[in-house]
Length: 188
Length: 182
Image 1 (cartoon, rainbow over the protein chains, first blue to last red):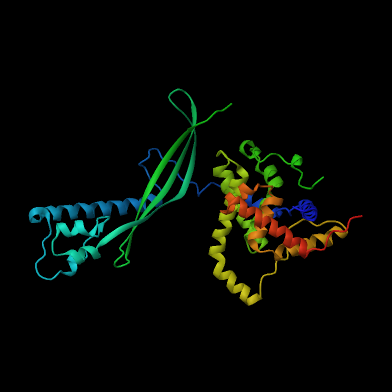
Image 2 (cartoon, helix red, strand yellow):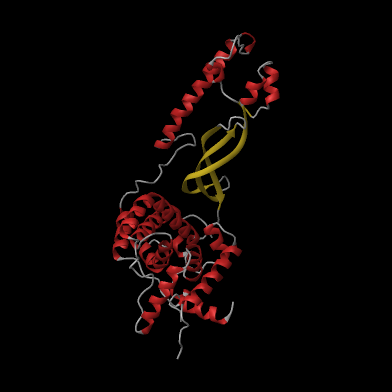
């Protein structure tokens, strides 16, 4: 960097950023004094999710599990465990869940004569993301050998996406995940 | 002596131990506010963003390991982005109606005598910089971050941060008349 740029750099460093207004300091003080309503609750066990976010997931997961059970029940009720179609495919038949990740040929082998329908129903996994939406430092805990450790709880939503190349339709599946990390620390 | 002499300030790491946020905020608040102003439309918005980020930090993040400065700057930037998304439509309408929102509040403290005129010139030149150059300049000069830290904060490579910094200085130099010494 040449000399004139260095001089300019030094000149800039001599400028002091303007301070926050007294009003901002007062606002922060008020907020820090008030009870922390935004703080996530403490969770006694990993499967206890009393916050509203998790309540919503409870209902969705319960509904999905119930639907899966009903689906399995009807599947096994069919002779040979395979749905047979007679005559032209009905709208109900075409609304079955897609064959996730299965190549079209394997689907066609299950149902000969339905090759084009199976190919159109082929979904390919195209992406997986996870979003950290909550983090709670749960403080110091002690391991078996009295080694102090910090326990931090992370909450993610994992989202998986499949796409059907033939119809360009996509399917997303999101599921909550909780992760607890215990990191040994030194208090010296 | 530079006005931002590090010896005058408590180390950023003191945030981990200090129970008094006021002292810490007095020392570091101005720098955070200057950062926030690069990512917001007005001083009022910048103060809102600093408040949100600082309170979140002080309540939930100050015990976390790692560099508190980087954590706070990232937090300020995220809060500014959230605010920008929320306010985008409203602000665009207001700008259209007002013919733009001239920022009247200065970035820096006033200086005595001729220094004040120079400060105004510098601020005016800073505002003319492209935002991606200005944010790098602010993080480098007034937050004293390395290019690696700036890159991590802004999601660009350290080389990109360094080249933006050099472009910013060169653009400022061409905009400003050289300071007459003596």
